Image (cartoon, rainbow, N blue to C red):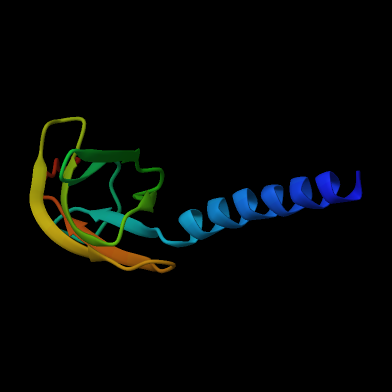
Length: 112
């Protein structure tokens, strides 16, 4: 009985250890969107590597994409008005957060 219990515990530890190793082998991309005057703007960020696509929507001009496999990702940013920047290639590193600032030219309206 003790042997079955020990085998079960070791099996569970192996599964949990493998899941932690997979989670630790990915990186993050923190994207800040700004207009041509350097003011934070909101929009959508899409990153693609092969057939994998990740997406986030900025709040206060920033968002973070998580669970990115290491390597080069093509990043595109777009505002709700349709203004767009990219694609720009960005290298992702396992267990790191890579920062990226994207400038999008948007129409600036003047107030009278």
